[in-house]
Length: 611
Image (cartoon, rainbow, N blue to C red; front, side, top):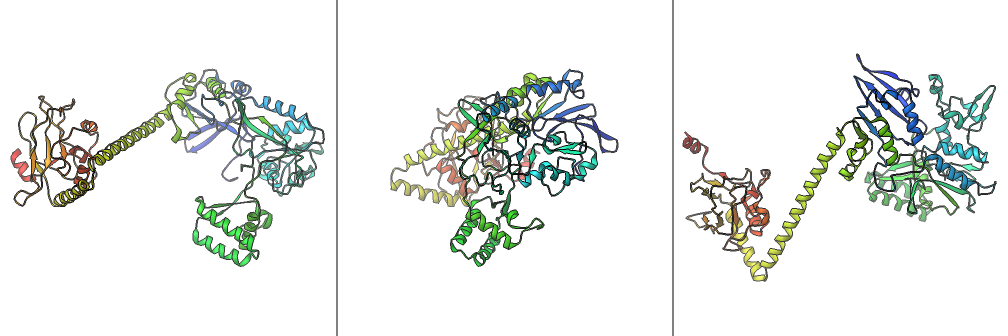
């Protein structure tokens, strides 16, 4: 990444040329989240946006932004942000995310609990991800002890320092290489001296982190060979676990805080999505592993992973332990050894039986803190950095959450999500309607088919009508409400919009009924007399209601849903057999359900009549 990502200093406006004649100004501002976390103030073409990324908007930090000379025009009203892209991890008015204890309050609680233990107590801090560096500094200073890291974490934090490898090892931080590119850039990470050490005259002053195990505080990854933590058989070490907050006696833990994988944990996975490849690997294991019980465990592990769905097998750090550091890719023999070691271990990590200290220390902002940040800038729009489209509701819209603190009411993201939200509701309503219609139809069929004889007659009549309909086109003279006759129209499988005529009188809508075809009049249609109970819909549309003679010889009362006009023409093709079957069982009750009616007259005859 060093050829693509360029290091920039904090609080220093930097001009970046995107294209000839097109430049923007970018300023990096500390985000109070973890080492290296920054906000981006981007200005150009008379507009400005603030992208927060992950932040912890504590009151003291928001006050520091108000006083920041780069941000002063936006916090005091001289200029206005066009949009603020906001960390909305905990953006909700619901408890327990409305209020969090500050980081300082959480550290104070931690130190108070730590002070109750004897001076020779060993503490193990669960740092599964970045963002707990201030806790390290507080513990190290309070207990006057450095903090042990495993080699992987030592390399990560050692890369923040401008000291070379020899100097880092001199103060006890064993790293295979140093960050020469950072040293050549002339920039410095401001947290690095306290964590990794710094040059003080002719001496190198150590930081709070070390690779040496003989210390009271450990924050190494378990299973990496630490003789103090991994060999703590008697559970003497006191475990320190950060949580987000407490609410009604419940401690809300952050994901990965106990036994989970995170940014600072090493993780190696074996892709097992290809069944053929896994089969070859199983054959190799069968030839290599002599222990039958161990072989059975390895094969079961591979099969379970393959059938599990995700296609990945977590090897943790077995490959690094078994293989050499110089290997770009593990050999098959190394892979088999890693599988054997992994299968021998217990699959689940047990909760520590050790004494445990939990303290509140959220790395993300509470809702009230986010409101305070937005109110300090009063942007025109707020756009969430994190959002779950499937769970979005107007309750968590930016206007509902932060509208009172903004200078405008644009909220582009709300408009996008509202369209998706309404579409989802419409689909749910249509689905419920189909399910209710299906239930009603099933009840009608059960009531009708009260005996095997009725069922047999129904099937015979349905088969007969389906056979006829498969070979027949239907022509229906439609009489409009004013007494005139329309053009002949055809049931064509439902490819055109429904025919509708404006209402001019209180005439009832007639029903049509299919009669069994005869050689002299195939597919003939008989028009029934209008029934008084069938009123014209209020919108004035003429609705033709098909009714199967296989079920009844008299028209039935219209279904409540059949009086609703179709919002869109149906485009799905229907065969005559399918049309007759659907009409017979009552799933669809109007011709409009099949896409409407269309003329069967030849186009030349129609044009001649028009002329």
